[in-house]
Length: 81
Image (cartoon, rainbow, N blue to C red; front, side, top):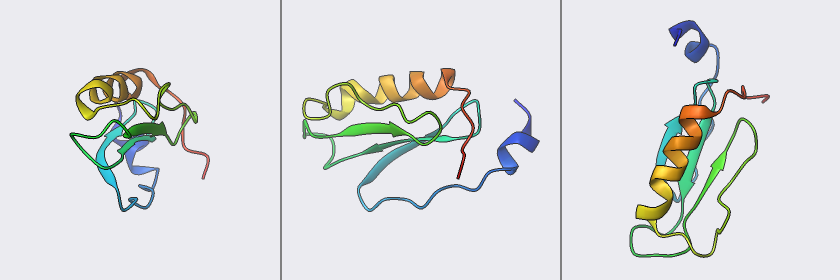
């Protein structure tokens, strides 16, 4: 991946409840937010394509972490903001 692509985009503000942030291959970000490890109310949202968790009220961190990382590894959408 070209570092020029990554440097061209500004990291969005970090939400207060940000747990993990992944960078996508398109240079955008996937945020995992929520109360934390023992909660089922965590979710992930992609700043590039707008995709998000399928079950935002049933997501323990250990379940959605790999999903968010897989999405970041495949998403080629660039940030539009």
